[in-house]
Image (cartoon, rainbow, N blue to C red):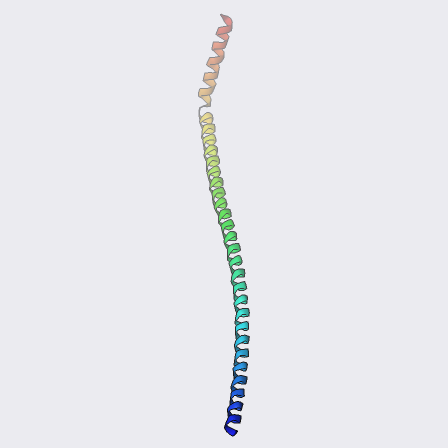
Length: 119
C-alpha cells in the first residue's frame, strides 16, 4: 500500500511537472512565433525603406546627370558667345583699320554708279 501510494504520488508529481513543462514549451513557442512575426514585419519595413531609398537615389542621379548636361550646355553656349564677341570685335577692328580703303571703294562705286546713269 505504501509503495503503491508513493508510486501514485510520484506519478502525479511527474504528470504535474510534465504539464508545467508543456505549458512553458507552448508559451515559449507562442513567444517565438510573435518574435518571428515582429522580425518579418521589420524586415518587410526595411525592404520598403531600401526600395524607397533606391528610388530616391536613382532620381538624384538623374537630376545630377541633367545638371551636368545643363552645365556643359551652358559652358558651350558661353564659349560660342565669347567666340562670336571676339569675331565681332576683330571684324570691327578690321573695318576701322580699313576705313580709308572702304572710303575709296565706296567712292569708286559711287563713281561707277554715276557713269552708269550717264550712259
